[in-house]
Amino acid sequence: MNKEEFIKLFSESTNIKQNPYHPLVWISGEPEIGNNVYIGGMTEVYAKGAKVWVGDYCDIASFVVINCSDSHKTTIGIADDVEREDIIVEDHVYVGTQSFIGGGVHIGHHSVVGAGTVVKAGYYPPYSLIVGNPAVCKPGYYEDKIKSVER
Image (cartoon, rainbow, N blue to C red):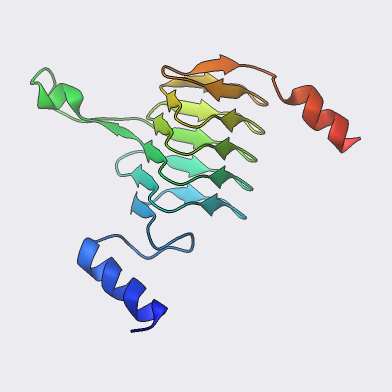
């Protein structure tokens, strides 16, 4: 069996749609993903019921979860519907391995999400360093560094 046959069989067996990133990237729904984006294996992009938008030149490492929905309130019986909120990741954003980006998140351009970070709803401005669980944002952390390279 060649690689293409394996990928097709894997996709049919798991319901993980084939994608241009990696055969082990799980994409659900219809996220909008920009140009020149890398998405590592074992990453999930879940976009059913809300807008998930990833800009150009982003690097999303392996084992990342980008998930617009939250069902914990329906599971424990305090809500009837799953909460779904949009996610925006602007251009030139790096998302480190084993990070989580939940619904209601807006990450500004030229930002970095450190490995293992849990990013909950909120606006994170451009050039930020976002790290930890829960996430702590250091706004403007990369602004001077990037602008000095651009000169």
